[in-house]
Length: 161
Image (cartoon, rainbow, N blue to C red; front, top):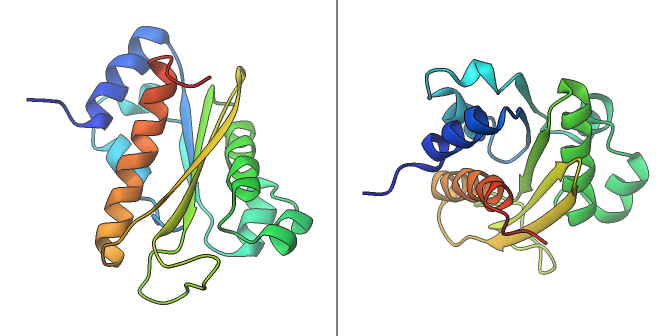
């Protein structure tokens, strides 16, 4: 039986002596919740920020207003700035961010319900990826938390170039 991603993350973080912080929008803290469900996570998780509004993304994470106004909250550009920002706030080795349209409202033809962007920032580089989920709001949030944790594991396993 495969372990949950947050359990695998625990092993990597402890053996490599790394820290991780989260910047979440559409998941509302679910990624942080999953990380902190593991006993001992305080050793590698200094904190996370739930930044739902443009104002919170700008003031708490340092996302530029130009980025938000040009690309919107659900974009590669925004999640990369969110990941860099949360890494800086908590002086963490890894910053993971997520911003999406959980639904059932809020979608547009260009950005449909379920579209979710993820950003990952480390001292070795920054990466982004996106998915379009087709579940309801709660399912989309769960899929997004799973994908965020898997993104970090992909990095730790050397799968990002």
